[in-house]
Length: 329
Ligand code: ATP
Ligand code: LTN
Image 1 (cartoon, rainbow, N blue to C red):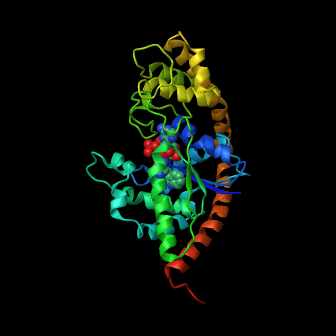
Image 2 (cartoon, protein in one colour; image 1 turned 90 degrees about the horizontal axis):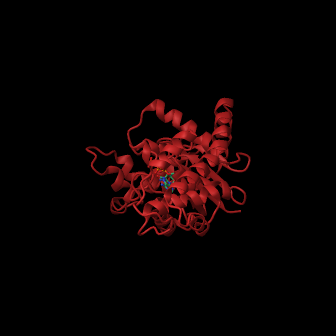
Image 3 (spheres, protein in one colour; image 1 turned 30 degrees about the vertical axis):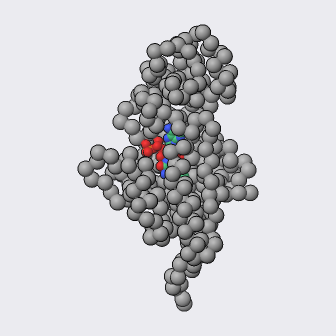
């Protein structure tokens, strides 16, 4: 059994981009691997946050993990901040990370662009992410395409540590879906769909009611043609919607093309909305049950206990290897 680790930020409502790019693969991998899935609240504070919103969104994201099909008897679900060893290893790895490496990170460039003041946490974020992964010696990391660069840095840091202090860390591999690794905004197919976007019309959240889903899809931008064809270079908007369609319906891209041949975009968008609603409705019903039962707190407690067992052992080993003096009686 390999180890799997991934995290999602409680920086807003989860979108179908998070679902297709990451969560669906969490659900898939839990059957064959030992999995650690966390809500990365320590990452969410790298941009200004409102305390009440952070608390509510953290609980909501954890409940959505379960509602989306993660079985807490199979996978460990927990809050990053409940396992303080992440921050400790994060600091140690920060000391092995070069400024130049962090300056090249596109997520940092995107999130800091045009801001008057940028916190140092946003800059060193990738070494905390590397700690999240390496602390479990994870083999696989299910993520969307945008996290590839952070994964490469994680591998480099693992190699650097192993080279300087002796072989210890596993080099993790990203696990990225073939279609849907980067779901684009409904308003602009050149930008990734993002839960923290200021335009709610650009994303569909997992908690959007059916009518909101229908409205957002009917307003999604398309080209002025009428052919439903998967051609990301020339038809980015339709190709993006087709990716969502494929994930929500189980049909292949070729089957979708054949189904709408000669019909234009109207029927395609209408049926796409119904497929999305069909995926979200049962998920939302489960979400409401989980939130009202309060069971999530117990799930998070158990998840953090198992996670801490593994994480504390790694930090102890790493301290030993790096030359920290251990406390003695
Ligand atoms: P934020 O807007 O706060 O940066 P986000 O929506 O980009 O958030 P994250 O919490 O950063 O989401 O990402 C959680 C996981 O979802 C990551 O594995 C990420 O790669 C994946 N993901 C995020 N957006 C998309 C998308 N549009 N398409 C596919 N995968 C995505
Ligand atoms: N950086 C990721 C969130 C994240 C993560 C992780 C993903 C933090 N730690 C560990 C996978 C593994 C993001 O912005 N989506």
